[in-house]
Length: 76
Image (cartoon, rainbow, N blue to C red; front, side):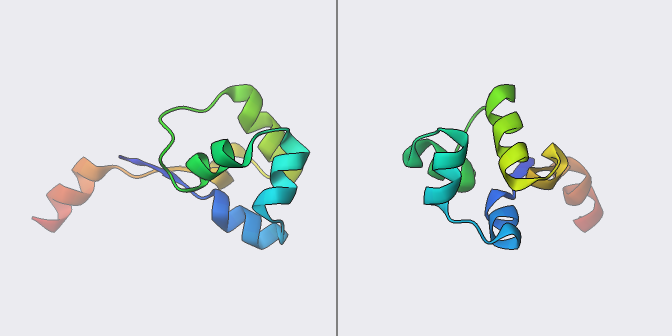
């Protein structure tokens, strides 16, 4: 998938645990874990807003687009 989730990177930069973030954004640990591992298929804007506020970051700090097609063409 061309969307990379860098939630773990931002959490490490802010020195915040999954438990603490879960409490701050009022999400279950399992839902945050699915997002953190990149297994989520979608994210609500309200969830992204809460995470960005808790981590004092921008959505682009958490989500990254990687163009797989361009990378494959370059490497061929």
